[in-house]
Image (cartoon, rainbow, N blue to C red; front, side, top):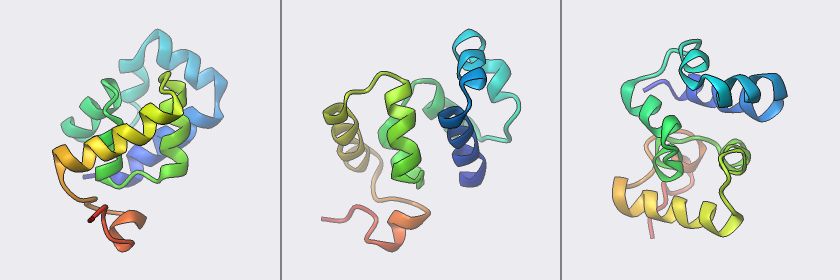
Length: 103
């Protein structure tokens, strides 16, 4: 898994209106600029916010990406909960060190 590249992509999308526009027009072209696994690509494309959370994407980055993909706040929170239920505990990153979503 390449958490660094997933977060770099999301960070760039969150900050760069030109990249956001490119992403809307040709998502595959933008994704080709990043070294991502098939699982990461699928999660970005859908978007599967819950899986991205479980992969370890930082919540501050993920929150803005979810908004970019038209998630309302409550949907974003629920997507993370659903991700834990469907995919298990957080695998990597900050949230792994804080319990990984364990109840």
